[in-house]
Image 1: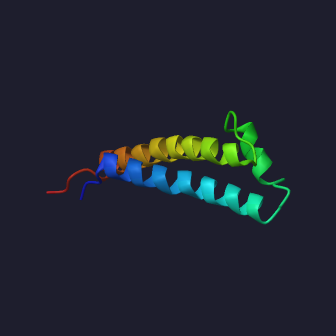
Image 2: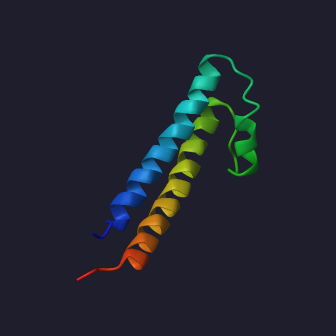
Length: 84
């Protein structure tokens, strides 16, 4: 069985992007300080625990997830191979 590289890349990108977006909104709405999320600012350029930062985090999370999902599918297909 081969994995569809594009499909896995898009789905993991969407999930990770939405996760960063939702967690940032959660912290803003409920007034958490965001000390844990501030560490994402060291990884994601322009990210902050703000309304604007949630959108930046979504973009960076999508890119991270897209690349990660594509690599997982690519290497799975490479190493699993076709057994006939």
